[in-house]
Amino acid sequence: MPSVREDGWKHFFKSKLFVLIVAIVAVMVTFEYARAYYQDYLVRQEIAYLEEQTEKLESKKMELLGVLKYVQSDSFAEEKARTELNLAKPGEHVVVVPQEVGAENRQENTAVLKWDNVSNYKKWYKYFFN
Image (cartoon, one colour):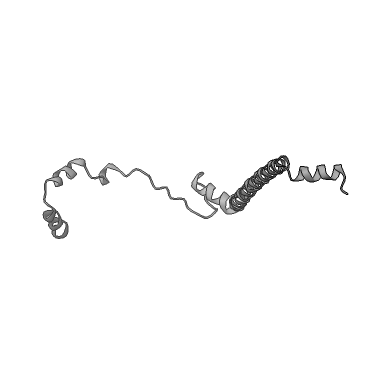
């Protein structure tokens, strides 16, 4: 014969209160699982972003190391000495070309204005035959 205590537990497990408690616990577990899954997703996204940034920084580091190697080389020092300090190697001759062209080689603005009113075919004719 079942005892009163056993009947009480059987009655409790069949009651609406038990179903309500189980439903609340199930909803809480589901929400916690969803929250943990979402946090895991965010962490994975952050890891992917950081790995991408690491690759970019590594490539930039390699590029900068190449630039540093070139800057520390003798050819860079020679190039800077030639271009900025106007130095030359022994036995070389330096030729300085002035940046401004003299006034005798310039075309006067008045000459340009005279050609504005001339038709195009006359300009070509004068170009080839005069």
